[in-house]
Length: 132
Image (cartoon, rainbow, N blue to C red; front, side, top):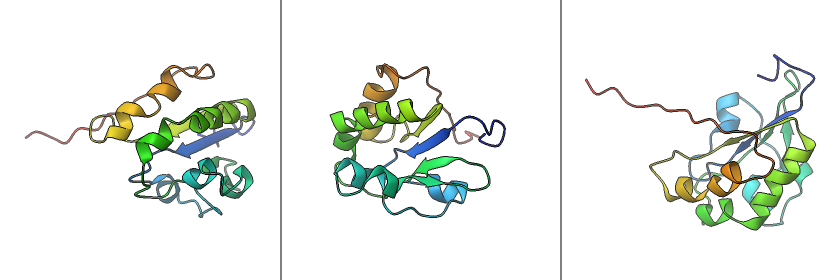
């Protein structure tokens, strides 16, 4: 995606605080922190923001099994974080938990992705196991 338009600044934020996978799925190196550490105030954005040198894609990793993940994703600081990213990047992609399987999904970026003033749209990827 980032290679198709190198002029745009794109950031992918791993919001699946139970099964974080953005960094490993994209083959990116770890950064100096995670989204939950930033939201808790123990890390700065510069410490948690990674950038792939070949594609220019920015990313924010998450930590697996983060305690209180639903509360973190619904927090005012998370909302402010997304708003800040929307001001700094052309495209902000939130990789969120599955919609049905965990409470984080029902409480999460509903407040962020659907009511955020900086949200231009949302996409849902659906993967269902075969039934036969």
